[in-house]
Length: 113
Length: 116
Image (cartoon, rainbow over all chains, first blue to last red; front, side, top):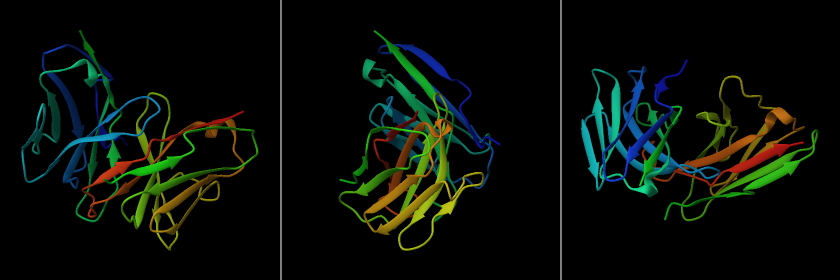
């Protein structure tokens, strides 16, 4: 049972344009969501997170939107840069103290010059 | 800050041998560390939660006798793959929550295990 789903395995975007990565979840007990960036043979690097009490969080070029009613979150990167090419994972955790992260399958983002 | 060091980054071992992977929190104390496994082009799957001074908690389907976890100090957790087989070949990653409460995860750089 895949509780966190990233239905797009890959995404290709032109440099300078907006990249939108999507993530859906099924468990209504999730209340904290994170996005990670990962290069091959490396551990994930934290990008941005959002608590369920918010619907938007912004950090520089990265913005995460959360739609609780739809159980959907998205990561917007604008403007996209070649260095953003990587695999992006969304992850979710439960109520405070649960600590376990559940990851989506990942989306490979390619930024074309 | 909040660095997790994982070693080795890459290891090749013969079938039937055991391999130990270390995960250290360099600038913070981690009472809890997590071990993940990633198959090619797949998600990170949580294998077990490592608790300092107590037994690890394994996820369903993970063989605790095959994947031995020891968390003897607040800065070190080890994962030992015992009697390794080719199907154990994978990318193993550890992480720790440096903020507590589930809000500050940082990951090690991962270990590529190849069993031949």
